[in-house]
Image 1 (spheres, rainbow, N blue to C red):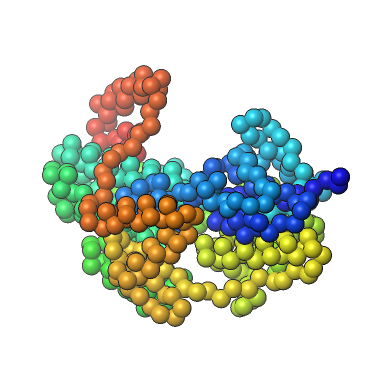
Image 2 (cartoon, rainbow, N blue to C red; image 1 turned 135 degrees about the vertical axis):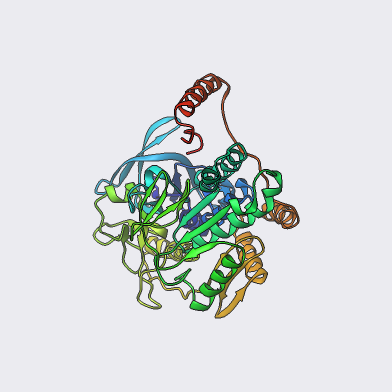
Length: 450
């Protein structure tokens, strides 16, 4: 009996999971499909700002990979990280819970996404908070809650204002969305902190270009600007940040925007796995042909945010958005089936159906099929789209009711900490060191808060 043809997909984001879903039940006999990821869940990255503002719970932002996979066809999900890929030998080594295993492949699909770029600005890695993962969102949320608790205990007016100043670097989708969520969340939960005055809390957005949301139309960018400013967000356009320090953000002209919380939403970098393969890259993304194959490497494909995919509709490189990742995955599924059957593959082409962003509680902007929406209609369309992407009707129903609850009641203020029992002694020793350090420098921020 001949060896099976093996398709291995590395990465379980939007692109990887939708590719496996699109292939389910369509694979010919003798073909095995393996999905490999170092995480057991898929992250809905556009929903991360809502997790920051506690408009939704963290579990709404992630979906278990096994729940995303449709039944049908010989497939396997392996939770593990890639240790090495031998492209000429068509094999990869994978670290798993059971040790390192060797996986042969006939077709390798790279769907590894990208990473937050922390070296784009000096000091961002040391003093800034990126927003790229669920862990990042929870860290920002916990930091905001710790800042509020700290303000109530401080008597220095200037220090209180620095602690209550949240600076967002970048006015694209993530920057606008997290700023809107933050200002609405702070307004909703401030009554839990009666010793904090309203004017001691401030959200500032620093945007280097002349308008917000440059990916959308000028009208929607202006609508987002008006909405944020109406709610008290300070938006500084054509303002470039030079570096981040423990005191705030230093601008290109030398001005210091003082604040102890800096959220970075600019810049992405290539996944180290993609960089280490020596494949041709453009702006950190793997260069692929129109059919999503990697030129010069038979049986190697790339899809999603990690790939620079030419769009046959307009000749441009496809944007790294969930909409295009899903379409590319479905297109690649057709091309893989065509290649297995000996038929020619087709070039990818997709016409953008619209883009949208939330800018706070019950507020959004959207361009859907040429129709522009603002306010709560755009917000509803945004939520309806992501609700439709959930893998099961049961999960969609559960999230719908929890979202409806969140529309009527203020966000949760729980500061989640996952300290294990054996770590409590070390935690107590750390707090004692922080107490001693504060006694020497009264205005220094503890490690937990900085």
